Image 1 (tube, rainbow, N blue to C red):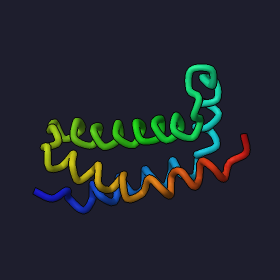
Image 2: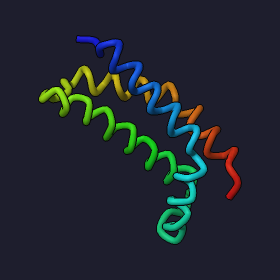
Image 3: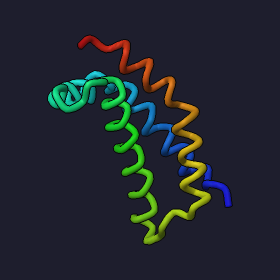
Length: 94
């Protein structure tokens, strides 16, 4: 089963939002700089976690759970956009 186009659009829009706010999330990651030696990786993890949370919330709002296939397709979308997210993180001032 493929993701519904509205969910794909939602995930893409979430990714775009978090890309536009990468500097804010980088600041959050820098708070934990002692624990996270790689700020870019930590920021990427925070952003992907936020996007995943939004993805899960769309299902919860419909009183559903994503299937394994839905989650795999979500992961593919994020994987395809990971370079865009990293680029936005690296472009922000430290």
